[in-house]
Amino acid sequence: MLKEYNHTIVNHGRSDYLVGKTHTNTIKGFWSLFKRGVIGIYHFVSPKQLDSYCTEHTYRYNTVNCTLKERFDFFIRQSDNKRLKYYDLINKFGIVA
Image (cartoon, rainbow, N blue to C red):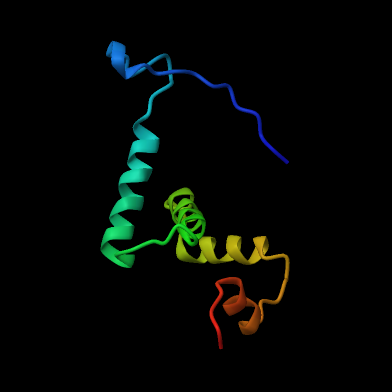
């Protein structure tokens, strides 16, 4: 189900950096951490895997204030008890076993 959001524009060209409660600091912070993660941990991200890396970092960013136990419990609840077989995992990424 898609959520609906109210969209507001912040025009940096007019030196607008805050309009009411609208700003771009949060997304800039996220992309800064994402780029640091790519450079510092992975060193390279292929276009094919970019969505997976973005999803992982989004999960980390959204659960930053959770304990490891809370994060793990949330992960398990979201898994829907679906079993992931090794063969399916490597085929998803096109790895030949």
